Each structure stands twice: as structure tokens, then as C-alpha cells.
Amino acid sequence: MKGNLRPEASRVLVALSGGVDSAVAAYLLKSKGDAISAVYMRTWQNGDGPGECPWREDLESARAVAEFLDIPFAVVSMIEKYRQFVVEPLINGYHNGITPNSDILCNQFIKFGALLNYAQENSFSHLATGHYCQIEEENGKFFILEGTDCAKDQSYFLARVAGKVLPHVLFPVGKLLKTEVRDLALQIGLPNAQRKESQDICFLGGKITLQNFLHSHLPEEPGEIVSADGKVLGLHRGLYRYTLGQRNGIGIPSNRDFEKFVVVGKDLAKNQLIIAFESDPNNGLIINSIRLTDMHFFTEPLIGCHNFLAKVRYRDPVTPVRVSFTPNCLATVEFAQAQRALAGGQICAIYDGPRLIGSGIYAP
Image (cartoon, rainbow, N blue to C red):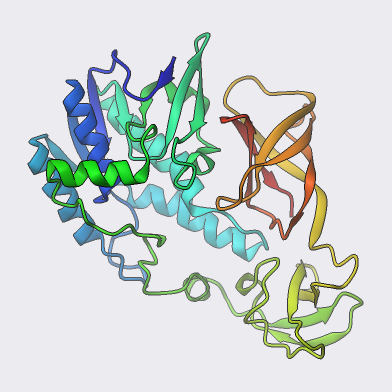
């Protein structure tokens, strides 16, 4: 069975973010006849963050949607859990030279972890969100499928969600295009129908950069900027300020026409930032294969070699790969097309056609 509006869903908790996608999700479920309630989840918005997250505006938008749809509405605090499972791993990851994804952590531990637990503890059969993806059931097993709207598909961000939660999750807008969602919101008169999408990490709120946020939580640890052959070219103010493949903001003037230095590595033991030119051979930036750690599967783990598709980053299209899985939650991915600047700590999502089957973390 493929789809998002399952007939057996009777009592559904809808996570309203304040945006139009979750609002339309709630409308679709109510139109289907489900008994639904809405919840707004507070995360970092506890007043001690350096950003100015517009959580009050989000909350009032969510409340207005619930009133418009005439459904019960509650606010639940996940502030401490968000700090524990999202913010602290983000800070620690950057300190240790890797690049975690806060959205993936939030979905794994908060939305489809703590919030789903809250829903079940309050006798809801399902938790629904406004994600652009779908659920598929096959022989009693549940999988995530890409959303119909390829430009908005969010399955990548769910690549670490536990497979056991999928029977209890609904994605009502997964079969729709974003334009259809927006048009439907306008047609039915949702109060947030014309609200703009937020692209910011909430606890930054668009008012502070990630680097400045990290600087407020991590000590200054200056070190050397070196060339690939070890020549000292300058000083950095902390390795966490730089990401693999970064071209701008390194602070070292180029001695080649029409070329910038690019970050090609970090030596944590020596606290050195390694840079080179994009055109330098064997700079390590372009790779044909990579090792994955902490493999995650939605059903039984896979072993051996398989041909799949992979999404190496959220904005990147899927690419053909050959994946060699081993029994110790490791895998090696061989790319049909070479990839650039895959940073340790980021996620590689593995697909079998449109079906998301699992993911791994790029080894540092």
C-alpha cells in the first residue's frame, strides 16, 4: 500500500510548525474524517540562545490555523531534549572536526522520537507532519518514499528515523506539489496561506551565523593554515569555522590568477587547516568512493554488494552507486560519478529507486 492518508488512522496528532505545509496536512486529515488535534513543539526558544528565533510568530500562526480548522491545540516543550540531542551534538561535532546535520538530528530524536512518544502516551494512533515524502507498506514492512515534488522532497532529512516508527507516521502532503499545497491553502482560506517559508535553523533565527553561534560555545583554538605539502601559509582561529570544499573566508590570498584556495582537509592532532587549489592534482577533494559508518536501515541490515542510488547532500540529485555493506555497520560507496567535498559527519542517504532504504555517516 502506498500513500499517506491511511483509512485506519483514527486519532491523529498533527505537528503544526506555523508554516503552510503542516497547516494543509491538518486540513487534509480533517477533511478525510480523522479525529485530529494539533501541537506546536517548542525547541530552542527558551530565551537564552544568541539568535532571535521568531518562535512566537510561529506559535501564533500555528494557533491561528488550529482555530481556523476548529481542532484542539496544545504547546509541548522539547527544549531540554532539543538541547541534548540536537544542539550539543552539533557543537561537539564541529569541535571534533565533523559536520552534523541539525535537521536530521531533530527528525531522528525529537519529531519522530520524543514527540511521537508524546503522541502515543496521549492515545494518538499517528503523528502527522508537513514533510514532502511518502510512506509505503510492503508485506508488513514500512518504507519512506521520495515526495512527488522532486524539488521539495524531504526524504533525505528522514534518513536516520527509526523504521519502527513508520507505521505510526503520516505525511499528508507527500503526494502533492508545493504549488498545489499553496493553491489549496489559498482556496480554503488558511490564515497562513501566504506565509513565506523559513530556511533557517530555528535556534539561529536568521539573526546569527552558524560560525558565530559556534564561536559563542567553543573556545578559540588558533592554529596553522598549511598547504598540502605542509608549508605554513597563515593562521586560522578555529577549525570549526571551516568546512571541506570552502572557498571563501579562508583569509589566504591566492598567488594564481582566477583561482582561490579551497579547504581540502583538517589535521585535528596538529590543529592545522589544509588548503590547496581546486586544480591541484590529488588534493583529495574529488573522490570516487567513500567509507560510511553507523549504517542505518529501515528493515533488516543489508550485507554484500548492491547497486543503488545515493543522495550525497540534500540539494544534490541522486547518483548511481555500488555499495559494499559489511556486518559491522560499515559500508563503502563507489560513485558512478566522482563527488566533491563530502564532509565527515554528514549523511549519505541510500535509495532503491524512490524508496529510501537507509543511510550512513561519512567517516572523517
